[in-house]
Image (cartoon, rainbow, N blue to C red; front, side, top):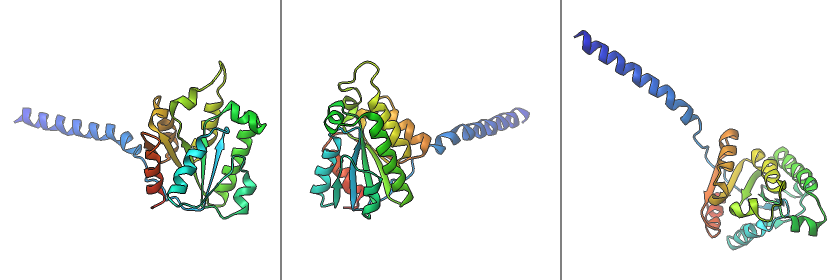
Length: 201
């Protein structure tokens, strides 16, 4: 009888310990993605061509949008946007053509995000060009792509990420740390379905 009681007590302790171990995992449960609404402002942080891919699907879905590669806080204030999609990833070629440096892009993007948050505009950070964008044409010491990600993603209310761009868990880590919902997709064509769901089309 004593042996049975000891076994039961040990079992109770084991179950209690396992319950405590599982609590941190539950704390990382991803929050539900917020509903996005039009009109939408699409811009970039780093002058990459990524935003153009987003606009193709927004147009196909009949979602009202404006695309401004050099959008500023004044653009947010001048029109009643309900969502701003900021595509991360820096293009040295794109920035050269626009006559801007990475520090200019970071400052401009910070202004857009601050204005959007103050006016209740949903900020969605997107990385849709995969791991290739994070390493494409990067010279030794060039971390402009990562600067772009750091400037946008932790301050976003929603992340839209192509899975192969998260091979190192970069975006998953940000999403968990900041408790931001993240929607991941496999291929470029899948982005249309993601946007369709987010905008309730």
